[in-house]
View 1 (cartoon, helix red, strand yellow):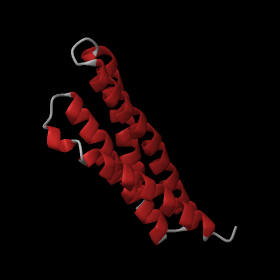
View 2 (cartoon, rainbow, N blue to C red; view 1 turned 90 degrees about the vertical axis):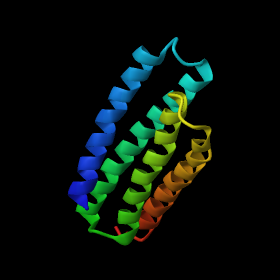
View 3 (cartoon, one colour; view 1 turned 90 degrees about the horizontal axis):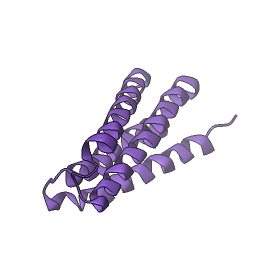
View 4 (cartoon, rainbow, N blue to C red; view 1 turned 180 degrees about the vertical axis):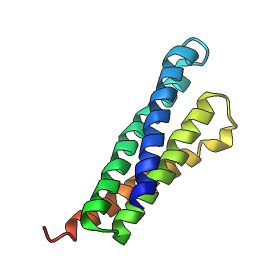
Length: 125
């Protein structure tokens, strides 16, 4: 899982920078301000969780492939896709039914942090 999570962290980080630049330069004045703010929130959370995923990969490398760490990484990945992805889609005119997907993504991110807490709490070092 180390390599998969490292690759995904790099991909989410790079795409987060690109999406942030697109939002700052390509969307300003083209979408309503509340939608632009939602888009920015998606970018912010994607970048934070890309770094969190990088940390999970490094912890797996250091502490071993534990279920709690593997779950933490998976929750972060799916959380980014659901949370940030739904905000991007909504800001770009996607269907309104995507709105309820956003809190599911947020819940997955929270689950990722709780799984990371469990991994840290169960580490004897």
